[in-house]
Image (tube, rainbow, N blue to C red; front, side, top):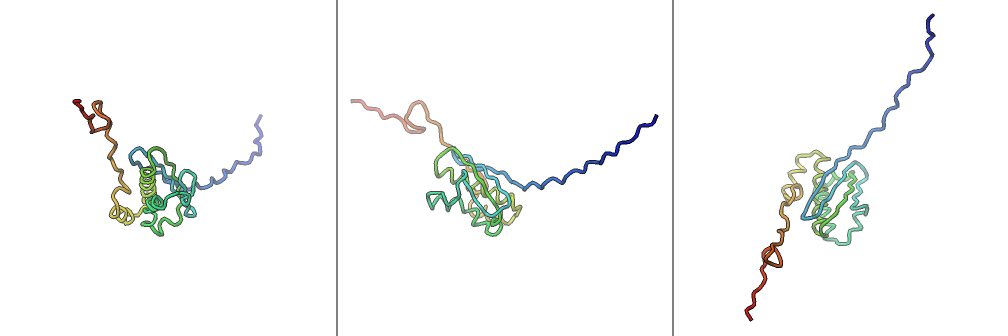
Length: 151
């Protein structure tokens, strides 16, 4: 007895939606760590879910924007989302700056851009390895010693 073949249609796989290319980089400065997610978009920069316009100080904003100004047209259609934690205000700004610079260079893949950023400031792409010296047991700070009084 022969089996009758069922008239099943072959399932055609649906085309998967193309995932956007995302570059993840990080920047460190003192105790601050920043993670930057760079992808194609409208040119929006967000730091901890806040727009770049929400940065209170103009000086901090100029530090953060420096790699984008150097990149110019190459960074116009790039969305950047940065998450930063730890440290103080200045070290967070410099960590964000490093993360953004690395992300833009990696996303663009341009050697000239890397060279121009490095010529401007080496620490935009490299991390500053200096850290706070730990306090020693014979004094109030790392190097200072308690004063002696003989009276």
